[in-house]
Amino acid sequence: MLATPEIEVAVRKTMGCAAGRGHGGINGATGLPITRNQNPYLKPRYFEYQELVRPVEIATKLMVIRDQIAAELVDDMGFLVAEGKFLSSVLADGDAATRPQDLFGSGLDGFMPSLACSEGRSSPFRLANFDLLKLLATKESVEKLASDEAGGADSRTARQFLRDNLNTINQHSTWVRHNSWIQGREGELCLTDTLLARALLDPQAKGGGCSFVARVVKERTKIAEKWTDMGAALNAEQTAWKRWHLTRSVSFAASGDGAEV
Image (cartoon, rainbow, N blue to C red; front, side, top):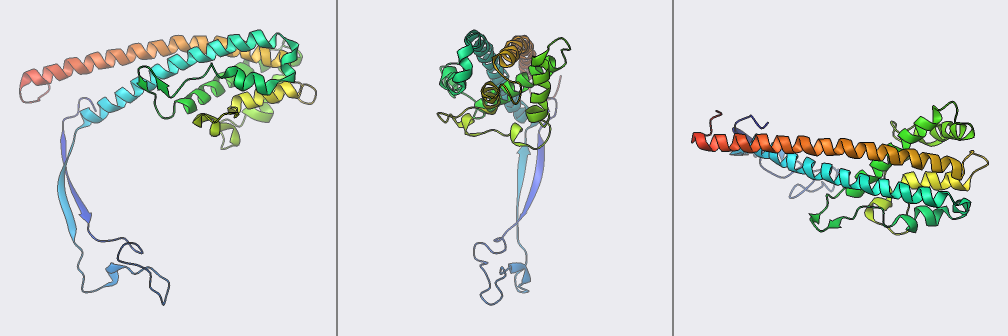
């Protein structure tokens, strides 16, 4: 798109109201929409105009949006790392299992991104992206624990946890849907924290408990740290794209007629 010249497109739109709306209305006798195309005395009319499509502008806007989202993801992985270290320290205390709602609720208020920041407003789905980021990191950490043959009871718990909650991640299930937490609703837990809190509360039936959750959180923190480095590489790629785009734009301007040089 960045290398595509401007395109002029002829647009031809039908004029008139849609069936059942506007002046069409509903036929009182039949209950059906009154459509003008059934009137033999009305000929179709069209509105025509020329639209100039600038692929470079579209691509530039997409790159700006991707740049912002990439930067937010890198920052938010920092929240996930800090959250993991905090949870690990608290889960070392066996009493954490008696107050999971406090631990995963108000206890994590300082470890989540805000829609308002000093650099300007965040992207509208930032909390949803953070929720998805946490979900994917949690799933990877649970899968790693489940595949550990020497993991003992925690590995068995991980396999059960996958069967009950995470193996449907690629299907249309409640696990992959966001809840009102992404809207900043107080007292609501994101889906990932809801499941981990449930594991703390149900150490017998599902083999959960502090040991399992602590290992998941610890591994998730390592994954988040690795993804942070990968995100930094994405930012470097974005910078390279912007440098190429700027150089090309200057070259176009210097040519005088917009031709590629």
